[in-house]
Image (tube, rainbow, N blue to C red; front, side, top):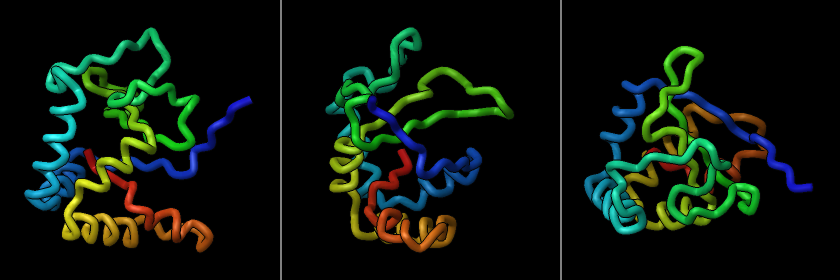
Length: 135
């Protein structure tokens, strides 16, 4: 039986998420935008099919087949707002996106992680793997 465990879960308010997004370098923003435009035709009008299990938005790989993945959602109170959310990205896609980031942006991500996700010492290296992407 395949099982997944949530290792980290966090919420960030819309204002803070927008602020963090503004801190990304121009190079990183352009690279990420180009990546999604290339990989997802009609990205601006993406509409997930909620009657099917959630798959990676880019690769369409089943999350059950992914060793790691992230799921993004947009919530107001205890309710999820639908639209573009929720969506998932596989670990392989996160690796591709991380390779597009400038050194400046990677430093910003490391600073954010170091400030907010200290956690148990055994997870220190896990948090530094540069897969924490704000899309």
